[in-house]
Length: 345
Image 1 (cartoon, one colour):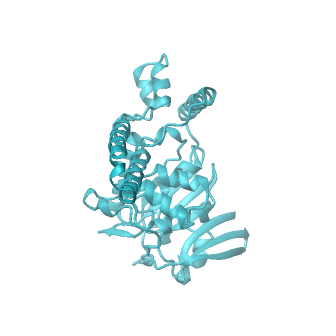
Image 2: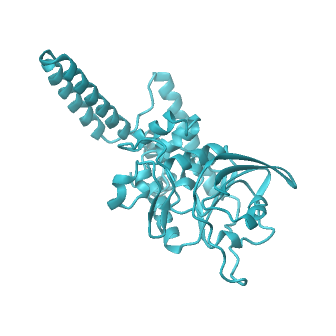
């Protein structure tokens, strides 16, 4: 499933294409798609295909097409502090985007049947939290992944505000999926060749909306009647230490934002976006050169010099005002590292 939009050269262009095709409709969904580079969830030798609107599968590792994920994110209608369950969470790509919207007081759980995929997802999550440029721009609800068959959740297990199922649901398990929702909650899942948005309106009532036709592999049915049930992560309260870290970072981030507004500064733009602007500049120059002929020779030299300056600017390390503020605090190094989530950048 996929191929609904043109291939992009990078994550920024992929998101632009999804917006132009009206798959991404809201600002918050656009922001998290730009924040999480889809290519980071590919194996390095397959990264060249990351920005095509196509699904990708390598062994047990699987990513749906970008147009599907954008429809899912829009249909979930996510807000801060909600609880989210991702059934067949795979690489953790979707769960990480969701975590940027839920914030630190949400719940973000994922169930995946393949152990190697869970390990892959944990590695990608760890890299994001320690290295991604945008991590400090958000308050994050860290996903928690468990291994198991999502059709083996215990009866009477906790319910969620939002649920996504990443594989086609067999008809006999439709009610099983619906009952994972709280009243007022939203379930998005492939069912009978449609991606459906299902809203629980009452104890025994639901409203269903078809979003778009899809073709998903079916959920893996349990092989044994006595197969062990899946234990979802607990929902224990945050520690006082965690709450202090969240509060301090929130105050520092607000101070940085207030200073930028006071000084009339715009937010630092991601490096990839600056590079992409260079590419448009090159394309526009080629069109000008072809249409205007030799008189454009001087403009070509100016263009190349400007392009070089922009590329040099793009290679400069991105400033991290939040980290700079933490570095200035009169605290022991170990505590500063804790406030930075032990980030390596």
